[in-house]
Length: 480
Ligand SMILES: [Zn+2]
Image (cartoon, rainbow, N blue to C red; front, side, top):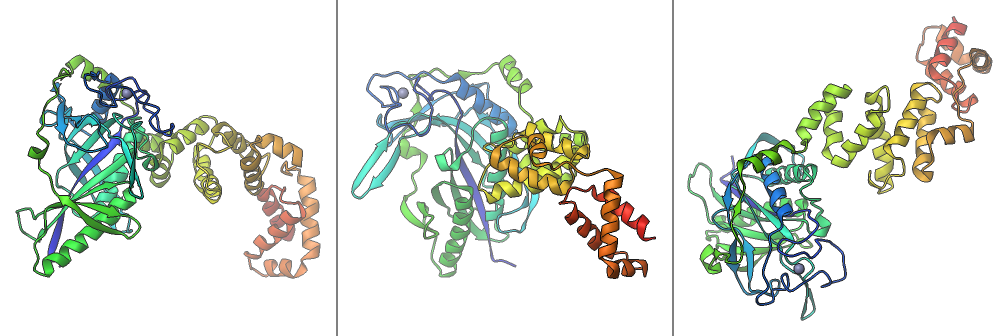
């Protein structure tokens, strides 16, 4: 029995997918040359006035609904004052005591990163508030380079209660949160582009204690993997400190992903340090019941609902539906193709085994795949109507992935049409029987497994084109 238990809370920053920034008309766009997407508002010039982005407010409310929050009919913006090079105006517009979304829950469960099972339960959220992102700073030697393209991009902060207790729970929470936000089209959550970053608060207490221990906050974790590692490390570090008789310092820590260690940055600020006050240049946000109902009615389908629908509509197994819906793009792909074929279950098998394997060995994604869902369905139809067999189908798929050609075109060009002519297969059967007398004898002496070898020989003779079911049946008949 472990001596300590961890209490963990997360603050996850997610950039909201909008056309323009939070308080100005500059494009919300990643990858442009530095400092080209700026204006007096997001550069913080004195006297420039902010205008709130309606779409960002709507999407944050949508996120709140998808995460089971209560949407506040009245919320407001506040100034968080601080001095740092990533925010030229000396304050960030955020929400303090009256955020847009309150409460909320996210389901966790399944397999954690380290492979152990995570108990199925709900993690409680405290709130979601809306704010503006800050400029991106990079440090080169003694110089700091600031890119204000990111400054004032709409940013949601999703805050949990101190409700998680292990690195694997943190992992499961972030994976599920990301999936829901992607399904809801709230954010692409592309971690490479910094669209999803999180801070974790970790404290330890003796098992059975009610009071919370002193916490350390590890800031700016850029990936779900990093969050998992940082929590594991921090539990280990704090356990050692406590075991050595030291007390934990309440502080903000950074994370070095290369060394896998957290390091002290500064003592933790409190809310008072920021001298928050209501933003005088912005009106409060009022969302009436009709507007909230309208957003709710238009909410997109979530992974769990889609899974259930895939099982019901396409007769998929729980497992197939689970894997297909993990990634929205993959689920969309399957659904488009499934509408065009007779046997969606077989299509699912092909996507999950052949297509994904080929894609992962080529480091490709489903979005970049040359085989469109329509083309994948085309291949399935050739298999369904016995134009080709499954073995040839695999060869055709490989070719399709390289050339992007239609299955039909490849089959016709290469003469891969399946042989289903009884006479032609019979001739091959007789040849195989003549050439393999030993195996035929073994079969007739009561060894049924030999048939596989004989079918293999026949398929070879036909260059893979014989219909395997017919071949087996005719072989059996002739060897009676
Ligand atoms: Zn601007």
